[in-house]
Every structure is written in C-alpha cells, then in structure tokens.
Length: 104
Image (cartoon, rainbow, N blue to C red):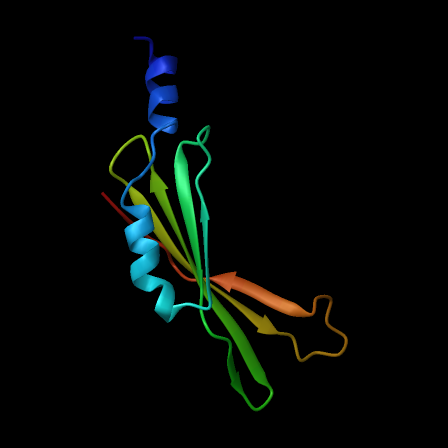
C-alpha cells in the first residue's frame, strides 16, 4: 500500500468515540457542532457555552477540539468573543483565543 493510499484510508476512518463525547458534554453547552468529513485528516468539534453578561460586558465562550485521524493527537483551543463598546470601533466584536493544549 502506498503512503497516499494509507493516508486516504485513515481519512475515511470514523472516530467512533465522538458521539459519546458529544452526548456527555451536551448538557454543559448551548450548542455542539461536529465537523467530520471523510476526506479530511482530522475531525473538529466546536463547543459553544452560555453567553456571560454583566452590565455592559458581554462575552461568548467556545472551545474547539481538533482530533487527528492519522495519529493519536488532539488540540484543544479556547476562544472568546466580546462585544466592542467603542462606538468608533472597526468591528462590533473582538475575538481571540487562549493558549491551546495539545496532547498525544
């Protein structure tokens, strides 16, 4: 089997534990989106959490979990989106992310 065929067979693989993972965290999230295309080398799960509001401060938190289909590796990145209070601001929201965590 050539390397290209080996990679392609891995990409078509379904990560069976993902549905159990999504089911176990759904109650803590407002939305869970699972992106797993057969032709892609990884699967992504986006967890969106309840919006936090305190006076004029509004923030939306989410986390993105990317799982490799090629090897036992994942990456977890926490993200946020804050409403921009600057009336002259260029964007209505300011987005960013925290330091991600990668593991085997």
